[in-house]
Image 1 (cartoon, rainbow, N blue to C red):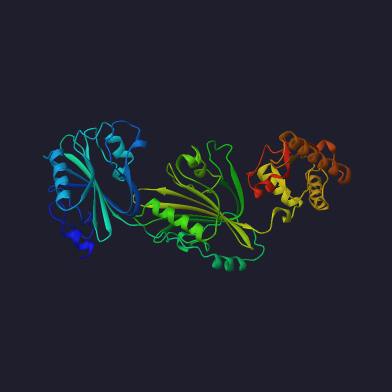
Image 2 (image 1 turned 90 degrees about the horizontal axis):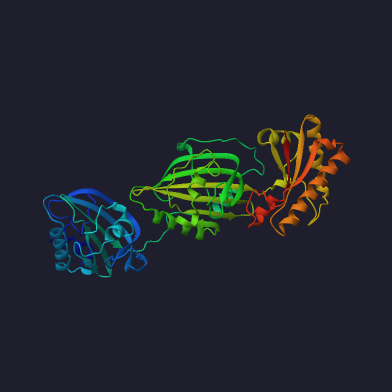
Length: 493
């Protein structure tokens, strides 16, 4: 006889559900006369079942069993019935029908801290149970033909009406294959993009017209509820724990940016969505730049992601203890950086996805001219110049630096009332004092070149060196170091 039929014939408290929309587990029917208060189901989830009493709050010593699979949650209430009667009926029914009782403790016998553990750390957590120190619980399992179901039942010995809770787990381990990577299709997509595209400002599309990114699909069954497409942006991707959102450890990703918000189907758990993305990253040969969850992300990670530094104008709604992933995918045509994070709403999951396609053309090939400098200074009060380069460990400029120097001189001629700080920056390699001195020497070299060869008045230029103290990206990565080695022109007010 197959397992599903055997489950269905268990009698007493254990009877099948009859309504299609009802999500009582077919193995366990509620106590006769009980009202259903809350019901939930996750097609896949992970949790622990407690196997001990709770005499103190040192939960590291609590015996538990980990379970995974399909979780069916129910919360019931009943009047004019004691917690002890409910508990003994469930215990008798489990034993009678061949359940193995792994652990049980009667009302008032589970220890003073049973309330805290069951409410916050056990598989009942998703029901937000309301228990007390006089609560009782049962952990049982049922095996047939290699299949196993487990149950956690709890009842609170409180005033009328009595609340009681149960979670039944059909144990199985799925393949986490609901997110697909199409690296070959993405490579073809990149080949079809023109080598140079004009920058677009905050171009967005209606959700109805939006599509998934060609590199990575949505989680199966999810709806794309928000979408924003930028022609060019600079996005601060966290690559370290963030406890101070004023000085975060970030990688600045520059390029075409797209933001997505997906909403899963009801009954999908965060753990299933997250593991599907983990599997997709592995299959797609992504480089994992940073990942964290809960305390490992830092106290300010949620606030940082909700700021305008990451999801530009997107304003995600996140919750505490969120997992965060920052990954990179490389092809001969472009690097693609991606940040994935989530909001767990108990009955469904929101996925927030920022994708930045970096151009294969680096900052050295950006045409620096007087108009470009004017736009940057007007908008930001400064401009970073990556076209002014120096020999290694030296303040001697390369020949390629003459073009941006000429553009600076032309810009100053057009803006006769403007004065500038010429600020040198280095990466964090080497001694901090040495980096400060080298950055000042390079700023002075640029200043002297503009004065002596391009006729700029000395009074309009003030050289400064800040070494590695003002990075724009992480010095832990080569890409970050490259961005940190720069000369900036800062408007002097």
